[in-house]
Length: 220
Image (tube, rainbow, N blue to C red; front, side, top):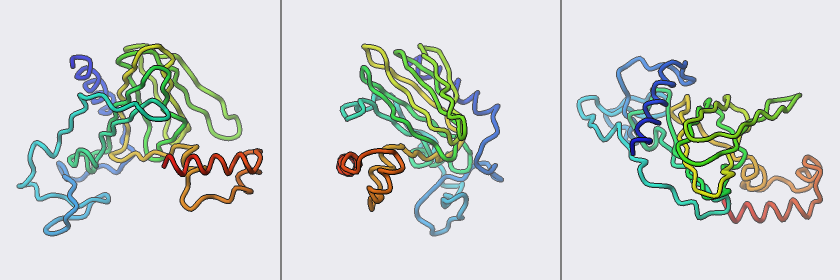
């Protein structure tokens, strides 16, 4: 628990020195609600009447490990505006990432946020790839207490290269950073992308593409 508290303090301090990608708020807070009655619409969410705001609007627990019993052997517990309504308009969010041995957080992007990650337990291989035309891989092995930054919009990943579980926390510069998992988005889209097109784009046999689409459709 001490490690979790230290991690969140670190992420809070890091966010305070960064310029949030989301628009800056013009009020103390705007606790998000789904019910529009007697509310004001701000940044894609309605705001609760400030007189009705309570502590629970700014709280969420990530003490429990996520379930890593899945094909990639990892679990991301998001802490964004959907979990903490009080984050609305504040331009930050966080996530807890649990890894089973050799588990991975597959290549993905956050279209609206830069991510800063701190490792609490285990050993992670992390990296991101720069944009066209170079596609340079920037990668490093991280141990407990190490920190790494993934620039906004770039494809990045984390892999547990140890024989024990690993845990990391990340801070993101958006209340709702979004995530696009590359393989799942391309091969698991709904409706599916034409396999002939994907075969040419990825220089694969059409049968391979159809097999991938069937697999990711089932996973999604």
